[in-house]
Length: 252
Image 1: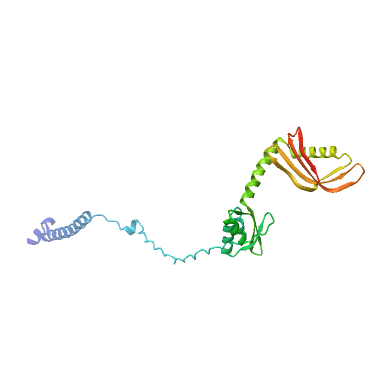
Image 2: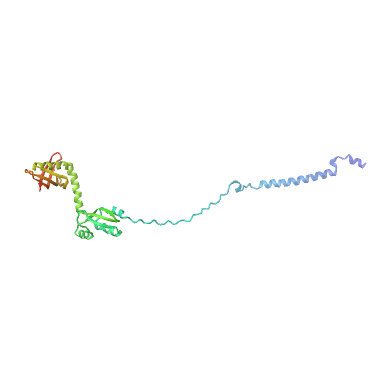
């Protein structure tokens, strides 16, 4: 009687059914609780990205300085005799000599007018008010040789050159020379041969602002056919190129 009742009882009324249900609920409850904690843990933690995963950390640069090599000071180049010679023209004589002596380059001294020149004369003339100026400088055997002229003569030459230029525009030397020859031939009709190339003693020089002066050698023949060779003739000419006039003429 009791066995038959047991067989006909529904399964949900059996003890082991409920025991199985309870066990399953415990299992699910346990799994669900861990899952919730994991999800909460995951949600609550901020998302951080490793710098090494997103960017390469720059490596600090290290600069190795090469040891500095001390620059050697540039050697000063001592001027040569040729260098010094280029600076001499136009310098006052005693100053030029002193500079050359200091550098050991002093050579010979020459006066442009052909007179003797030395340091003693330079000093003496300077005391007397005569100033010598270097007109040219040459180099020989490592020494600087100076040629000098007095300042007074240099200024006179410059004045003469200005006068020559002015006078030439009015009366050319070619026209003046032709006038001198014509005048000489008229004076010495038997023979008047000038030496206007090799025999020039003083080329055309302004006598004043309006007159040329000229001196050269000449051969003169008289009416008897006798010729006097190597005489000197002087001629002064004024006027213009178109109309030159001889105002002075001498033969001796």
